[in-house]
Image 1 (cartoon, rainbow, N blue to C red):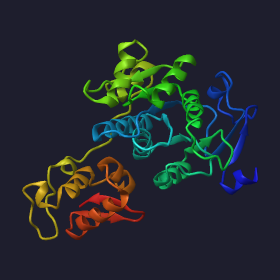
Image 2 (image 1 turned 60 degrees about the horizontal axis):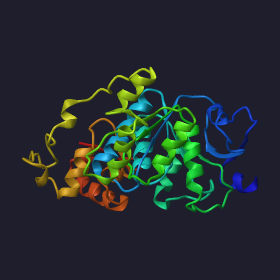
Image 3 (image 1 turned 30 degrees about the horizontal axis):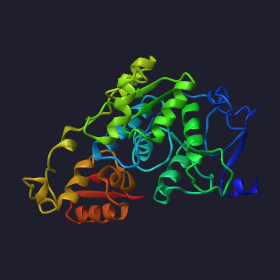
Image 4 (image 1 turned 45 degrees about the vertical axis):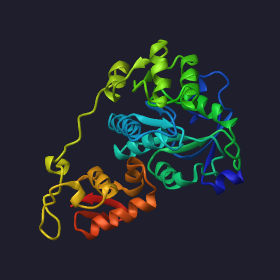
Length: 312
């Protein structure tokens, strides 16, 4: 118990009133959970899962699912890994919602290590980190099927975005099916190995088709949120001006390709955190921060406290 307290976590036993009711109903539920943050006993939750190594389109899809689910008042569950998991968590935060990361390690072991800031934002932002493993437990391969069972058990539905044929995301889907939890799959390019998992689920009738998050919400009978207000100028191809007063004719006149990609991800009204931008641009956070600093010097990006950025 001291180790849990040292990790700012609490312990929930199976018979505790705060133990999630959905999880209690699965076969052989975890006898205890270590929780850092807020794990509500009964809220609407959807798991968004998939591959660690995935292209930009897959990351964007996972982010979109997390964002809309959050705006619909649905808590997003995933496994805290790189790739689809992290993008879904980030999307939920972007949508000003909450998200649960179920870990395949002890509650005090940050894995992957470069998700430390993301984990802090989840736990401090109304969501939680959850593990059934004792503090200090390292992320061994045998831990992840158990983690995947808990991801499914916490959720009202599971969405597989991108996954290879042999993927932990498909284990999560199998657990969901065994627990009578609906499974949805996002179809992908047949030439993409990371689309083999969801395409296979659809082909075998093991999942329902989800071309976007609205499909899932509609099928569950849950309301679809209104789109957030968007200033058309914030999505123009180039900024109206920079500090020199010159309007660039193309993104390449702003800065190099990486800087242009980051600039296109920014909005004029909603700040984006550097970690989220780095994830969506598929570059290290340190590189993203450096490029954003260059854009700031050119007068086309504004930095806010906490490493949040806006278009100018």
